[in-house]
Image 1 (cartoon, rainbow, N blue to C red):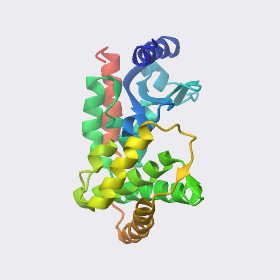
Image 2 (image 1 turned 180 degrees about the horizontal axis):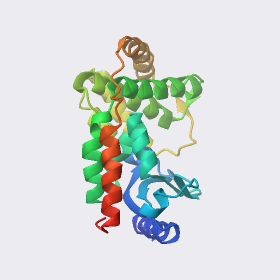
Image 3 (image 1 turned 135 degrees about the vertical axis):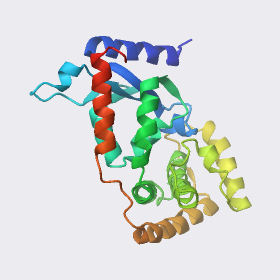
Image 4 (image 1 turned 45 degrees about the vertical axis):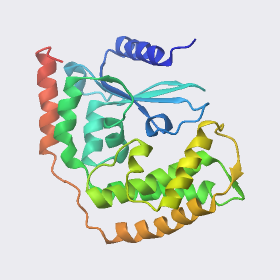
Length: 260
Protein backbone atom coordinates (compact mmCIF):
# COMPACT_ATOMS: atom_id res chain seq x y z
CA UNK A 1 0.00 0.00 0.00
CA UNK A 2 1.33 3.43 -0.95
CA UNK A 3 2.51 5.52 2.02
CA UNK A 4 1.99 9.06 0.69
CA UNK A 5 3.30 10.84 3.78
CA UNK A 6 6.55 8.86 3.72
CA UNK A 7 6.85 9.48 -0.02
CA UNK A 8 6.40 13.23 0.43
CA UNK A 9 9.03 13.40 3.16
CA UNK A 10 11.45 11.50 0.92
CA UNK A 11 10.75 14.03 -1.85
CA UNK A 12 11.54 16.87 0.55
CA UNK A 13 14.89 15.32 1.46
CA UNK A 14 15.61 14.89 -2.24
CA UNK A 15 14.86 18.58 -2.86
CA UNK A 16 17.22 19.64 -0.07
CA UNK A 17 20.04 17.49 -1.45
CA UNK A 18 19.68 18.43 -5.12
CA UNK A 19 18.95 22.13 -4.61
CA UNK A 20 21.39 22.65 -1.72
CA UNK A 21 18.70 24.25 0.46
CA UNK A 22 17.20 23.67 3.87
CA UNK A 23 13.44 23.29 4.10
CA UNK A 24 12.19 24.96 7.27
CA UNK A 25 8.45 24.46 6.69
CA UNK A 26 6.52 21.95 4.59
CA UNK A 27 2.76 21.59 4.81
CA UNK A 28 -0.35 20.46 2.98
CA UNK A 29 -2.34 23.22 1.30
CA UNK A 30 -5.75 23.21 -0.35
CA UNK A 31 -8.67 20.87 0.21
CA UNK A 32 -6.82 18.26 2.28
CA UNK A 33 -5.67 20.92 4.73
CA UNK A 34 -9.15 22.46 4.72
CA UNK A 35 -10.72 19.11 5.62
CA UNK A 36 -12.92 18.43 2.61
CA UNK A 37 -10.77 16.48 0.18
CA UNK A 38 -12.44 14.18 -2.34
CA UNK A 39 -11.33 10.54 -2.65
CA UNK A 40 -9.38 11.52 -5.78
CA UNK A 41 -7.91 14.82 -4.51
CA UNK A 42 -4.19 15.32 -5.11
CA UNK A 43 -1.67 16.38 -2.48
CA UNK A 44 -0.73 20.08 -2.57
CA UNK A 45 2.61 20.27 -0.77
CA UNK A 46 4.01 23.74 -0.11
CA UNK A 47 7.34 24.51 1.53
CA UNK A 48 9.63 27.37 2.56
CA UNK A 49 13.36 26.93 2.17
CA UNK A 50 16.59 28.75 2.98
CA UNK A 51 19.64 28.94 0.71
CA UNK A 52 23.20 29.33 1.85
CA UNK A 53 24.38 32.74 3.01
CA UNK A 54 26.74 32.85 0.01
CA UNK A 55 23.84 32.41 -2.42
CA UNK A 56 22.04 35.43 -0.97
CA UNK A 57 25.16 37.57 -1.37
CA UNK A 58 25.66 36.85 -5.07
CA UNK A 59 25.01 39.62 -7.60
CA UNK A 60 23.44 37.37 -10.22
CA UNK A 61 19.72 36.74 -9.68
CA UNK A 62 18.49 33.36 -8.53
CA UNK A 63 15.11 31.67 -8.71
CA UNK A 64 13.02 32.26 -5.62
CA UNK A 65 10.72 29.28 -6.21
CA UNK A 66 11.31 25.56 -6.58
CA UNK A 67 8.71 23.84 -8.75
CA UNK A 68 9.46 20.22 -8.08
CA UNK A 69 6.61 17.98 -9.16
CA UNK A 70 3.14 18.19 -10.67
CA UNK A 71 1.19 15.07 -11.60
CA UNK A 72 -2.14 13.44 -10.80
CA UNK A 73 -1.14 12.68 -7.20
CA UNK A 74 1.53 15.17 -6.08
CA UNK A 75 1.82 18.93 -6.54
CA UNK A 76 5.02 20.04 -4.81
CA UNK A 77 6.53 23.52 -4.89
CA UNK A 78 8.10 26.00 -2.52
CA UNK A 79 9.27 29.55 -1.88
CA UNK A 80 12.62 30.94 -0.88
CA UNK A 81 12.62 32.54 2.58
CA UNK A 82 13.30 35.99 1.12
CA UNK A 83 10.22 35.69 -1.10
CA UNK A 84 8.18 34.49 1.88
CA UNK A 85 9.22 37.51 3.95
CA UNK A 86 8.31 39.83 1.08
CA UNK A 87 4.89 38.15 0.94
CA UNK A 88 4.44 38.60 4.69
CA UNK A 89 4.97 42.32 4.09
CA UNK A 90 2.10 42.15 1.58
CA UNK A 91 0.02 40.25 4.14
CA UNK A 92 -0.33 37.36 1.71
CA UNK A 93 -3.26 35.36 3.06
CA UNK A 94 -2.16 32.15 1.37
CA UNK A 95 1.19 32.29 3.18
CA UNK A 96 -0.58 32.78 6.51
CA UNK A 97 -2.68 29.70 5.68
CA UNK A 98 0.43 27.63 4.98
CA UNK A 99 1.82 28.75 8.33
CA UNK A 100 -1.29 27.46 10.11
CA UNK A 101 -1.91 24.27 8.12
CA UNK A 102 -3.00 21.35 10.34
CA UNK A 103 -1.17 18.89 8.05
CA UNK A 104 2.55 19.39 8.60
CA UNK A 105 5.33 17.42 6.92
CA UNK A 106 8.18 19.43 8.42
CA UNK A 107 8.37 22.42 10.76
CA UNK A 108 11.61 23.67 12.31
CA UNK A 109 12.13 25.77 15.40
CA UNK A 110 13.55 28.43 13.09
CA UNK A 111 10.27 28.69 11.18
CA UNK A 112 8.28 28.88 14.42
CA UNK A 113 10.44 31.80 15.51
CA UNK A 114 10.07 33.51 12.13
CA UNK A 115 6.30 33.17 12.07
CA UNK A 116 5.88 34.37 15.63
CA UNK A 117 7.60 37.62 14.64
CA UNK A 118 5.96 37.94 11.21
CA UNK A 119 2.37 37.53 12.48
CA UNK A 120 2.15 41.27 13.08
CA UNK A 121 1.90 41.77 9.30
CA UNK A 122 -1.53 40.14 9.12
CA UNK A 123 -3.97 42.72 7.69
CA UNK A 124 -7.69 42.20 8.22
CA UNK A 125 -8.89 44.14 5.18
CA UNK A 126 -6.58 42.32 2.76
CA UNK A 127 -7.55 38.94 4.22
CA UNK A 128 -11.28 39.62 3.95
CA UNK A 129 -10.77 40.94 0.42
CA UNK A 130 -8.84 37.75 -0.46
CA UNK A 131 -11.55 35.46 0.86
CA UNK A 132 -14.36 37.55 -0.60
CA UNK A 133 -12.61 37.48 -3.99
CA UNK A 134 -12.21 33.69 -3.83
CA UNK A 135 -15.88 33.22 -2.98
CA UNK A 136 -17.02 35.65 -5.68
CA UNK A 137 -14.93 34.06 -8.44
CA UNK A 138 -16.06 30.59 -7.35
CA UNK A 139 -19.70 31.64 -7.39
CA UNK A 140 -19.50 33.33 -10.79
CA UNK A 141 -17.30 30.69 -12.38
CA UNK A 142 -18.75 27.46 -11.01
CA UNK A 143 -22.03 27.89 -9.14
CA UNK A 144 -24.33 29.57 -11.65
CA UNK A 145 -25.09 26.54 -13.81
CA UNK A 146 -27.94 24.08 -13.48
CA UNK A 147 -25.68 21.57 -11.67
CA UNK A 148 -22.54 22.03 -9.61
CA UNK A 149 -19.48 20.24 -8.33
CA UNK A 150 -20.02 20.11 -4.58
CA UNK A 151 -16.37 20.86 -3.92
CA UNK A 152 -16.99 24.35 -5.32
CA UNK A 153 -19.68 24.90 -2.69
CA UNK A 154 -17.01 24.38 -0.05
CA UNK A 155 -14.60 26.79 -1.72
CA UNK A 156 -17.24 29.51 -1.50
CA UNK A 157 -18.53 28.54 1.96
CA UNK A 158 -15.11 28.30 3.54
CA UNK A 159 -14.07 31.68 2.15
CA UNK A 160 -17.22 33.41 3.35
CA UNK A 161 -17.01 31.84 6.80
CA UNK A 162 -13.39 32.97 6.97
CA UNK A 163 -14.60 36.53 6.30
CA UNK A 164 -17.11 36.23 9.15
CA UNK A 165 -14.40 34.86 11.46
CA UNK A 166 -12.05 37.78 10.77
CA UNK A 167 -14.90 40.24 11.24
CA UNK A 168 -15.69 38.70 14.65
CA UNK A 169 -12.24 37.82 16.03
CA UNK A 170 -9.88 40.19 14.14
CA UNK A 171 -7.26 37.53 13.43
CA UNK A 172 -6.33 34.87 10.89
CA UNK A 173 -9.13 32.28 10.64
CA UNK A 174 -8.58 28.56 11.21
CA UNK A 175 -7.55 26.53 8.19
CA UNK A 176 -9.84 23.59 8.95
CA UNK A 177 -13.35 24.07 7.61
CA UNK A 178 -14.95 22.27 10.58
CA UNK A 179 -13.46 24.82 12.98
CA UNK A 180 -15.14 27.63 11.04
CA UNK A 181 -18.45 25.86 11.68
CA UNK A 182 -18.13 26.91 15.33
CA UNK A 183 -19.31 30.34 14.22
CA UNK A 184 -22.88 31.32 14.99
CA UNK A 185 -24.86 29.94 12.03
CA UNK A 186 -28.53 29.26 11.48
CA UNK A 187 -29.30 25.66 12.42
CA UNK A 188 -30.83 24.80 9.05
CA UNK A 189 -27.76 26.09 7.24
CA UNK A 190 -25.51 24.12 9.60
CA UNK A 191 -27.59 20.98 8.99
CA UNK A 192 -27.32 21.38 5.21
CA UNK A 193 -23.56 21.96 5.41
CA UNK A 194 -23.02 18.87 7.57
CA UNK A 195 -25.07 16.78 5.14
CA UNK A 196 -23.06 18.22 2.26
CA UNK A 197 -19.83 17.22 4.02
CA UNK A 198 -20.97 13.61 4.22
CA UNK A 199 -21.95 13.52 0.54
CA UNK A 200 -18.69 15.21 -0.46
CA UNK A 201 -16.53 12.54 1.19
CA UNK A 202 -17.91 9.91 -1.18
CA UNK A 203 -18.11 12.12 -4.28
CA UNK A 204 -15.53 12.32 -7.04
CA UNK A 205 -14.31 15.83 -7.82
CA UNK A 206 -15.77 15.84 -11.34
CA UNK A 207 -19.25 14.69 -10.28
CA UNK A 208 -22.08 17.16 -10.99
CA UNK A 209 -24.97 17.42 -8.52
CA UNK A 210 -28.18 19.44 -8.14
CA UNK A 211 -28.12 22.75 -6.30
CA UNK A 212 -28.91 23.03 -2.59
CA UNK A 213 -31.15 26.13 -2.37
CA UNK A 214 -30.39 27.00 1.27
CA UNK A 215 -26.65 26.99 0.74
CA UNK A 216 -26.95 28.99 -2.48
CA UNK A 217 -29.08 31.59 -0.68
CA UNK A 218 -26.44 31.95 2.05
CA UNK A 219 -23.64 32.32 -0.49
CA UNK A 220 -25.50 35.04 -2.40
CA UNK A 221 -26.47 37.03 0.69
CA UNK A 222 -23.06 36.72 2.34
CA UNK A 223 -21.29 37.81 -0.84
CA UNK A 224 -23.27 41.03 -0.84
CA UNK A 225 -22.68 41.55 2.88
CA UNK A 226 -18.91 41.04 2.68
CA UNK A 227 -18.69 43.30 -0.37
CA UNK A 228 -20.09 46.13 1.74
CA UNK A 229 -17.93 45.30 4.76
CA UNK A 230 -14.61 45.25 2.91
CA UNK A 231 -15.48 48.45 1.03
CA UNK A 232 -15.92 50.26 4.34
CA UNK A 233 -12.77 49.00 6.07
CA UNK A 234 -9.68 51.10 6.61
CA UNK A 235 -6.33 49.97 5.22
CA UNK A 236 -4.61 48.28 8.17
CA UNK A 237 -1.43 47.08 6.44
CA UNK A 238 1.84 47.34 8.35
CA UNK A 239 4.10 49.30 6.02
CA UNK A 240 7.46 49.18 7.81
CA UNK A 241 10.07 46.59 6.85
CA UNK A 242 12.15 46.71 10.02
CA UNK A 243 10.93 43.49 11.62
CA UNK A 244 11.20 41.48 8.41
CA UNK A 245 14.67 42.86 7.69
CA UNK A 246 15.74 41.87 11.20
CA UNK A 247 14.35 38.36 10.68
CA UNK A 248 16.24 37.92 7.41
CA UNK A 249 19.49 39.28 8.86
CA UNK A 250 19.15 37.03 11.90
CA UNK A 251 18.71 33.98 9.66
CA UNK A 252 21.81 34.88 7.64
CA UNK A 253 23.89 35.34 10.78
CA UNK A 254 22.73 31.98 12.12
CA UNK A 255 23.62 30.36 8.81
CA UNK A 256 27.14 31.74 9.10
CA UNK A 257 27.38 30.26 12.57
CA UNK A 258 25.89 26.94 11.32
CA UNK A 259 23.04 27.11 13.83
CA UNK A 260 20.12 26.32 11.50
